Amino acid sequence: EMMSRGWKYFGGNFYYFSHTPKSWYSAEQFCISKEAHLTSVTSESEQEFLYKAANGLPLWIGLTKAGNEGEWYWVDETSFNMKQSERFWIPGEPNNAGSNEHCANIRVASPRAWNDASCDFKFLFICKRPGI
Ligand code: 2F8
Ligand code: CA
Image 1 (tube, rainbow, N blue to C red):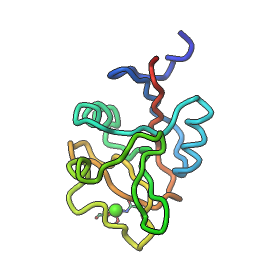
Image 2: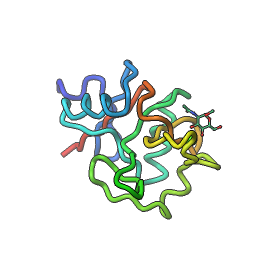
Image 3: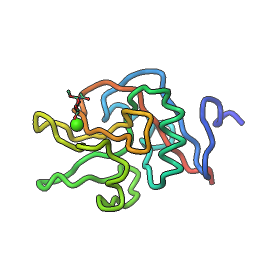
C-alpha cells in the first residue's frame, strides 16, 4: 500500500519518522498534509517503540502549551493528564528554560525521554496517523 511507504506500524497506528528537521509548528503542518498529527504518547509501550526508533536523535512530539496558564495539550486532541504523564519526562523536565520552552520532544532513549524545548528549534519529528 502506498500510504505505508516510510511509515512504521505499531499498536493500531502508523508513524512517520522525518528525515528533515523542522520547527514544531512546521512539523505539525507537514503531518497535517499527510492526514496525520505530531504523535501523542499515552503508554509506556508506545514510548518505548518511539524512543527505540529515534536512534538517540531528538524528535518533536505533539505536545505543546496553550493559554495564559501554559497548560500542556496533545495536538491530536488526545486528552493530556500531567499526573499520568510525569513518568515520561526526563527527571527535572519540563523546566521551561529561558521561559521559552513550550514544545516537547523525545530527547533520550529512556522510558523517561521527554524534554521541553523552544518551539522554534528545528528537530526531526514523528507524525502519527490512525490505522483504521
Ligand atoms: O540540562 C537540561 C536542558 O538542556 C538544554 O539546555 C542546555 C535543553 N535545551 C534544548 O534542548 C534547546 C533544555 O531544554 C534542557 O532543559
Ligand atoms: Ca527543558
